[in-house]
Amino acid sequence: MADNKNKCDDLPSEKSTQKFKLSSCEAKVLKVARYYFMTFAEPSKQTWLDANDYSIKNFNSDQGPYVALAILSAIQSMREARKSEFKFNNADCEVCSKLLTEHERGLMNTIRCKVNGQDEAASAHAFILCEGNDSRQFLNSTLILAAVCFPDEAKKLQQLLVNEKI
Image 1 (tube, rainbow, N blue to C red):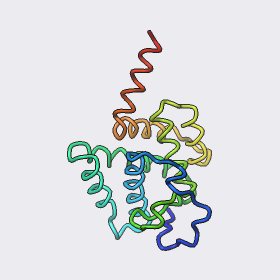
Image 2 (spheres, one colour; image 1 turned 60 degrees about the vertical axis):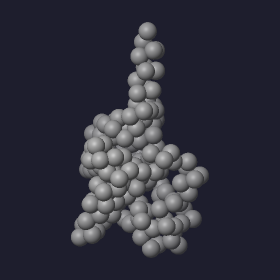
Image 3 (spheres, one colour; image 1 turned 45 degrees about the vertical axis):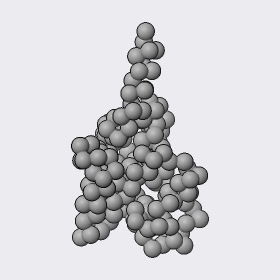
C-alpha cells in the first residue's frame, strides 16, 4: 500500500472526485477504504479505528459496523490477489482526498459495476485491479459490499431482475 500523504506534487496523474462523479455514498465508502489502506501502510497509526468511527457516524450505528466490515472484506480479498502495492490518497488530507488514484478509480469502478449489476464490467475492472490474478473472492466480497453499502440501489436492481424474469 502506498500512501500519497503529503505528496501533493504527484497530483497531475490523478483525477478529481468531481470529474469522476462519486455519489455521496461512494465517497463515504472510499473514505472508509482509505482509512483501511492507511492502516495497512502504517499499522501503528491504527486508522482502522477511524474507518469504524466514520462508518458508524455516516451509515448510522446499526448499519455502520456492517459497512466497515464489508469494505474491509473487499479490500482484504483484493490485497490477497494483488502482488504490487495499491496507491491511494490520504483520507484526511484536504487536497489529496478530493482526488482519486488510478487504483482507487479501479476499486470504485468495480464497486459501481457490482452495484449496477454489470457483472462483466465488474470482472474486467477486477481483473485489472487484481493484476490478472484470481479475482473471484474479491468480486464476491464486492457483491456483499454493494448489497450492504448501497441497499437502495441493490433493491432497485433486484426488482429489475425480477421484472425481466416475468
